[in-house]
Length: 295
Image (tube, rainbow, N blue to C red; front, side, top):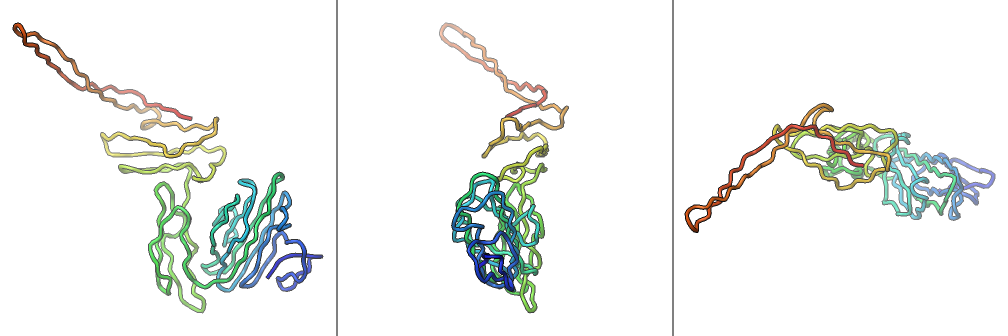
């Protein structure tokens, strides 16, 4: 299956003749090829192309060529039509791995290609094939328990520290005429604000490691045992000049106690040649407002 056009001659989802790749379309079948418009030449500017692929057992995408202007030109892949929250957002010139979609019951996948008004490159050459129920993979920033994919087998997902699981943590392989997973795979998202308790944790900016959006005001709460201090260590810190991270102890009007050890030493002379040094140490605690800002 190869999608292209010359006077848009399209028969049963298959283009019979063609010279230029189409910008989007509906494809029904177990195999096919999706090309960026103009491929192998540079794709045009200001594109918004959507392909809908339907197969009998889900879809597996294999990338043979991939070169887009990063980050403005990008490819979105989803299986429920929700492009604001895609399964994958692909850009740049790194060849993506093989991806699978449409494994949980509707057997469809959608691809949307967006380009801006400036730079363009060769685009992409993607082949797809229908696939039976198999390894659904592991969502980004997550781990999975379960290596069997037979009827009744259960997979359990959990997120890396700092991410929140969005969707079911357990999916089950269902029986019937066509085996399917009981639900779509969950996603692990870095939210705007969170609450962390315990002796250690991770705080992430929204959409990390991707770019955070505009007009965010995120509040993160850290709670530990009484009498314990809190140490913050930044493993990655990149903010725009006008963006700011503000760290405070407790509430806006709270105060923090800081204790220091003070030692006073006296040198005493005993007799003719004996010198004695006496030190007295004690703790001094003061209360002060904590307000540390870094940008």
